[in-house]
Length: 113
Image (cartoon, rainbow, N blue to C red; front, side):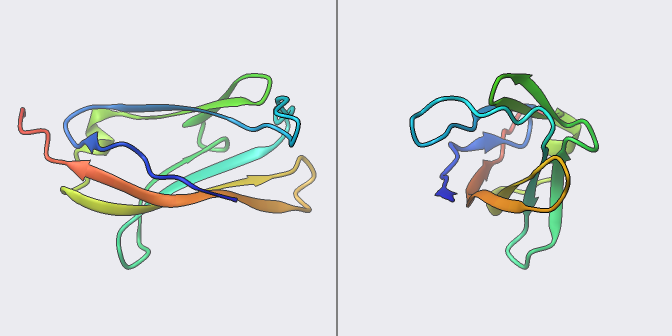
């Protein structure tokens, strides 16, 4: 598991993130049949944003690579502050889920309406 500190994101802009899952030899792992869930929560653990392969906000874009996308409308629901995040991966038959990452996400007030 990795502790990720995301760069600040604006609550007045969309947010695109591209990540990669690699093995110990730094070769990409085929995750095309796996499920991914990324969640942004408030300080009390209440979900604020959720991207997953099930809701199609996370897509597989290449061998070992994935992308999530939140619209400006979704991001505008976040007040300025720091949120908790977590990313999990579940194998293709649903028997194993691993925590890929956890970490803070700073949100800044983007000012422009």
